[in-house]
Image (tube, rainbow, N blue to C red):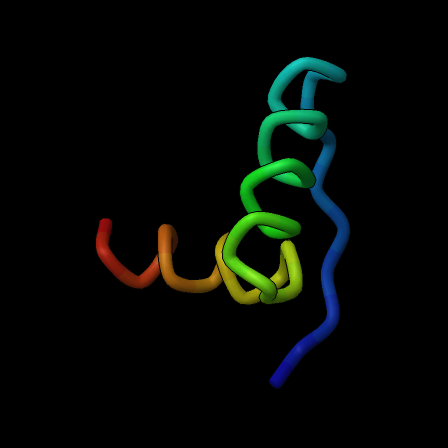
Length: 38
């Protein structure tokens, strides 16, 4: 796996963080799954 940096608007980051807490998983996992679907 390769480490990378992305820039998100604050509202997107906040929503992603909230979703990660609700789903008990890291934000990185949610981002990887979203990217794999595209």
